[in-house]
Figure 1 (tube, helix red, strand yellow):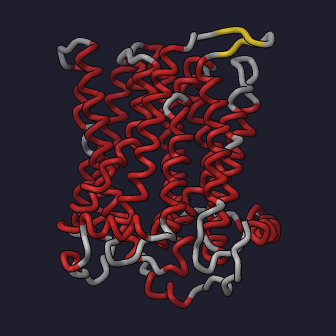
Figure 2: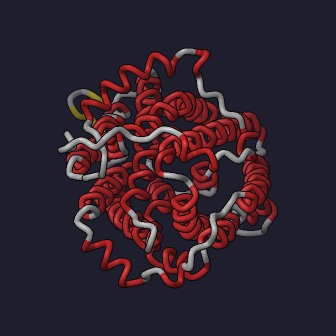
Length: 441
């Protein structure tokens, strides 16, 4: 919906790219967010900030009826997107610290795997509905009203999410004010030899992703002329693969550790931008291959990255460790997004090379693919206690994959299970295997 609003308000490709990068780039604000978590409390701040971030889009409902120029509307829209991104960063820091206290380490991978399933189903369903609605109403001159209606629906969903967050259990609150905070916690994080490789990886990986992340939706809608419904269908395809793969990755993280999953998925995701270089408006089939690869690997990468962040952050001072990880990623993402935007503005809109027609975004895709491969090498240096190696992960995946893809084993989400108390039995579930003497790359 963000790209649809930006295009409707006349935003340039550079502005659209920067808007798409803003949510991750705002991770540079994680240190103030950690301080707020430290002072206010995990659940209290998570509910307030996450809830507020999902209601900021309420003014968009009135946009079609305000007597404002397009330039003013675009400026207000950018301000709303920036506010949402800042609030989301604050809420995410508090939420992850909260989940670190709530979810036992032995089932953390499966927990985030199941959460990925729910998020994917919700995101794919809403994206498909929004795409069909925009494609149906835009030709009739109702695009503004359709976008306003989608903003209203998003606010209603935000209210429901606030209610659900308030119902979520919070462990007996620790005395967070007695924990090390501020510069002391940050200094402890930077001195931690086990943490530094992950910080460098976060910096390099997010910079590599940012080189093109903000331009993919624009590329699909403008260069490939896919239409909102086709873009949404691509999102649904990615979602289906993620739903199937999420339990597989979750079990792998719990049994073998997050590190091998992160290493494998990082190298695999490096190929995703390269695939985007081949589709044309007349040849879209490579996008199907990209959907399968991206759905499977990004799901595993997300689960492993969150699990590793929580595993490397001690309970004392955890918000500040999480803030350091996110800030490193945000710095890389912000710097690369600015450079990518400048490069996109200098590159020709279209040029011929080797007998083929290319755009500036194709060059950014190539840069991102090579940079991701280089960043994946840094993931090999990450150390995690009790983690196994990538070869054993591949053997485990080869063994578990046939069971996962069987219809009778498909992990169909059941939303009503969020009201069931299962955490009390979590400690009795699976444990990781005995540690390897030397983790294999």
